[in-house]
Length: 256
Image (cartoon, rainbow, N blue to C red; front, side, top):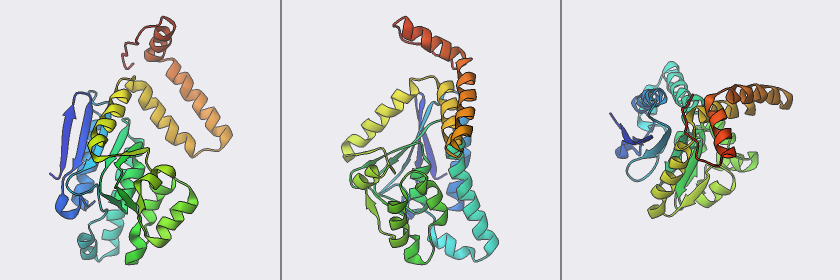
């Protein structure tokens, strides 16, 4: 299996481990990632997932040798549908996913970064939707990426195929922050531990609510989020959290 999972207490590291193809999103790797994320989603011990790539960089996107060999329309459709399935799994999954990026995150690799809830990179990381350079517009990658940043910088990336640097990716909202190579692991673990210390029932409700309300008109979004706040308020953890705050003590989460 080219996907490695390392469990560190309540944090799981998912590593795409195929450096020879620059961690390409081949049929096999996409299927394996979907299986891994579904399994971690149902693992009660896991509270946060970190996604990273082995070798020189994060992921260069689809394996172009494999793409070239497919030839038939049905096979192309199957590949792009499978890739979309992984991205939807990341968004609709119960656990927060943090992308930890070094090197290049190109095309579907950039889509993968954008599909994660949070993203941090090295200062020299590069992000691109370069499909236009090979006559294949990055239409599916732009779904995730365009939902994380403004239209003008997105269109420039799509129309020119040129990569952007980490500091600009941070400026336009594609990533949360960038650090030196030596600090990246420490900083990502620090944020993962902070999130893991919260009630994972609350996090699960909140993540689901966040993405659903984004797609709604204003009034509908308020109606939906009011229902979800009420649902959250009925949970033991909300009652415990409020009591702990008022009593000036640390909450003891039951995740119920």
